Figure 1 (cartoon, rainbow, N blue to C red):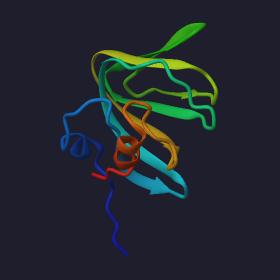
Figure 2 (figure 1 turned 180 degrees about the horizontal axis):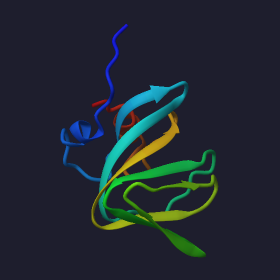
Figure 3 (figure 1 turned 120 degrees about the horizontal axis):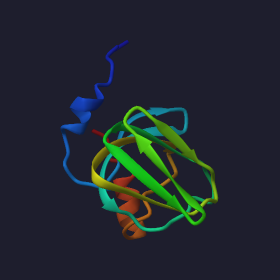
Length: 121
């Protein structure tokens, strides 16, 4: 058996692109993904699953049609399934997502998403 902790900062140093989640681990049918964000993303909804955001560095905002939440370094937030949201960050923010393996990033075309969903670093 091979035992080694996953160093989040090391993994984050391996990419610079934003809004492009990278898979760093999997447990059962859920994946752990790192992503760097800055600026605004589009309004979208995940009808079939909740979405977990954990801020590693920086600060992000998630706008909802009826309010907003600020998630600072060391904090997490769970967006319930079916809730429309618009994530953003004024400055670059590093976050970890936990979501079912079947969830794909909502930007781009379906074929691009299928490929991007399985990017391991």
